[in-house]
Image (cartoon, rainbow, N blue to C red; front, side):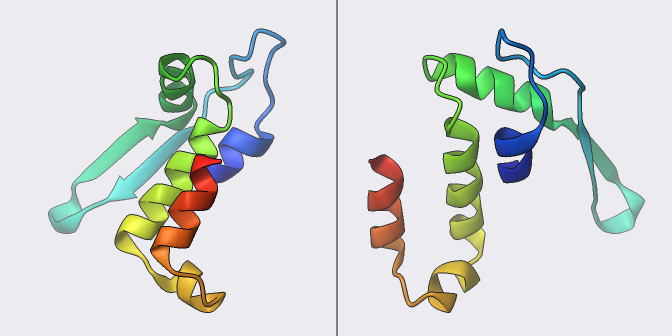
Length: 86
């Protein structure tokens, strides 16, 4: 989500030029397919056109289930969330 929010090509209107899908595999051979560009567009529209919401969401999701990134830089979760709010 982070990479798509930052670098995926967009039209001048802000919508994405090319849709991108993510496939996740779950136990028992079950797969889910997500249109990541559509998810980003909905998030951006819901937050007043804020194109950084995809980046903020990606970092928040990463921190919710993974504390490797903040620990790598000796940063606690409170500090990262404070910085995201700025």
